[in-house]
Length: 493
Image (cartoon, rainbow, N blue to C red):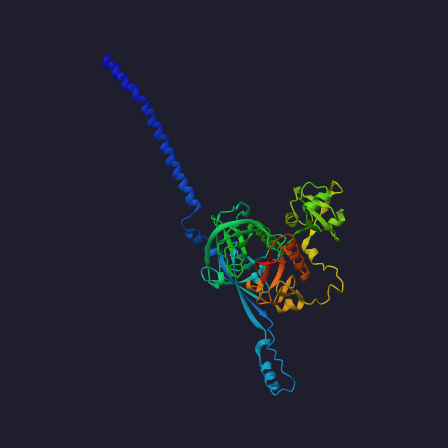
């Protein structure tokens, strides 16, 4: 009996050990599986190579070359005193100078094919004022392109080529799904070097630069001159942005680039493809953001909404909108600020009747407004007076001699007829502006994210920055159609 009892004890002692070993093996197996899955996820998040993706999309990305005939500059002007023995010599030299002859200039950019029948997307500033546009494909084939339509407001243009075979194309992705930190791939023709790929991440979302409809993706993927109009891809090979601008003190990439979000681009492209032009909704009000003091004075609990600063002739006035109203909802959507309202109105169908809720004298009022078309409204010249049309002398500010754009300056600098801003007429070479890369002929279109039309506007922005305790002011500068930001100090001298 003793032997049997001993054996029973051995069996009783061994069973828990076996159960423990089974549990241990199960958890070790589960841990190993989790580590394998984690490695797989990390492998997807950080690919070892972009080669497969680059090979897949390269045939749909194009280089764009434009050619434009411009009036030549006048020959050198020699101020020779009348009667000088050298007068005849210099007059003959000036008469023979070819400087006043028309000349042909060229520019480079990028783009991408969005359909097999030859529709191509690029930036408007790449092809603006061009007489001829040539598309070079990855294979080396070249085709001439025609402009289908352009939208300066978002800097998007739609081109069309006629090919004898279906073209490889890429699809747009949902830019709203892009997250900060996601991998992205930029492709284009930087600095005229030919097809080039750069990789980076989404650095920020919903950036606004200078336009009313801006929704830019910020990326650190290298973007340089010539990349304009090229695509920004996600890892599925979908276009989520159109590379448009960089922030740089010297004109080269420093890792801050901006791509217009695809969800903006697709709406523009669809309209250009259907109508050859954009058709945006128009409310007909001048608005501004609320601050805490204004909101408190009006009896509002927060600064959401847009206060109506003016009501010119248009849909809003016809519907009864008044100066001082605060627009709090538009077509069923709460209004966060003026930028959000402008984008929502612009994205709404022309002719649609929408409900607009305004806050007026302590209560809300609901109005029904039939939207007009913004492009039609902008085509009507604003009423002015003779003083507004009087010549404006250049004024000095921030180390620069500045002048509003005039028809003469626009022609001289080859600017579009609708160009607005301040032209740098002269610049002090000892100034910070010169050190940051500004030069004579540059066009400053915005300061502190507000449009400029006169030197007084810039002075107001400088004063606001100083009063707000800020040390610098962000300027949006265009040179040759290429936009970039420059921050200048506004500290008192």
